[in-house]
Image 1 (cartoon, rainbow, N blue to C red):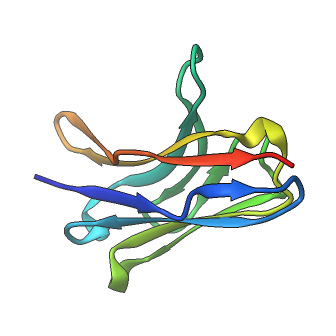
Image 2 (cartoon, rainbow, N blue to C red):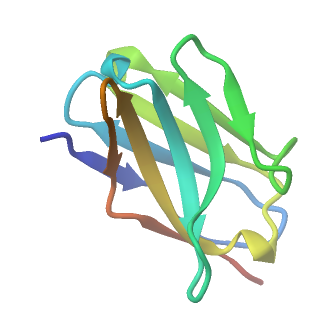
Length: 118
């Protein structure tokens, strides 16, 4: 069973930066997509950024130009560099990995809290 472990969350002032890490228990090369979602209480989980096999990326409009997703296959790790953080970025951030074959399999981490506040 695949395990994803996030780290790097915390409290940061508006305008600050954080880097989230997601370490997989095995090779991330087996996944078609890896991404970061976030969720605040009472709202649906939303996709923030994704990186696809081959290296292309996707960003939600709300984070374009501020967040960068990257991966290090040798370390089985996906990162989310978050700059110019705003209060509205406050959420629990979840790492997601997708494996597609005949069926789609989604794997999730436990989440890491990011709080942007002065």
